Image 1 (cartoon, protein in one colour):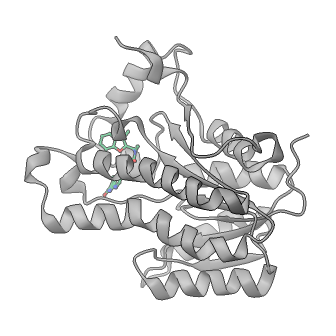
Image 2 (cartoon, helix red, strand yellow; image 1 turned 90 degrees about the vertical axis):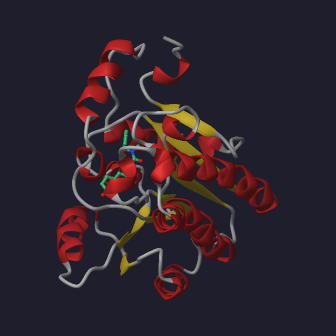
Image 3 (tube, rainbow, N blue to C red; image 1 turned 180 degrees about the horizontal axis):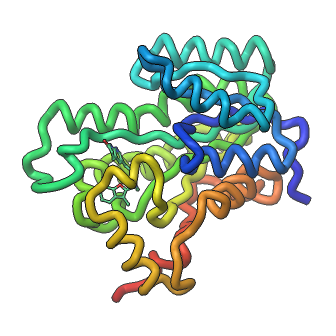
Length: 258
Ligand code: 0WE
């Protein structure tokens, strides 16, 4: 049976009610997990208020700021986990950022700064969070991150994010290899395009979604809830033999050649 009762799950990447991380948090909660939520702090406290109100029904026992570009934020967040929970079972990494300018036009024109920013937030953050989580996953654990087909096949305008996701997918394999002996599993979900805060800022996302609706075997896109269910499976004992994998939750789109 899929049951996460007694499991402590830290979820990153909730920005609003369209976030994939929100779909994951809801399904983990439904399965009985005890939740900790991180949010991106900003001067005006906009995300803090929005995310706090959103997650209130899930009664998280931890609610902490975490800007993954700040080592001190990551340390403080995992100090809170250590103090409040003692052990961590589940880590959800649902973070990415690139400058909007770098998600259109010529990839060859990506700036050094834009490239470094994208890989810092979208790729290195997984390794950093896993490094902090590892000593707290004393009874084994499950780590899930989010990737996209644009990290494997060229996708118009995904550009520098494709390089970040390629690095992220390889990070999953190296981390899975290192953490396996501690019974900590590391996997990624490769979701099809979904309308979220991040994706709706992307020009042409609606055309991409319509293309998927025509071509994908299931003739539709996927929902945050479907991604949440797959993540919950990967975090459960039902997936105890699965690590280092990229699980496509994309209505079958990835198998198609034309
Ligand atoms: O990984 C993503 C989202 C990545 C993303 C999106 C934005 C837009 C707003 C990262 N940073 C930003 N920064 C912003 O300022 N996806 C898989 C969704 C997505 O993003 C695309 C896509 C798809 C699909 C960007 C270009 C082309 C397709």
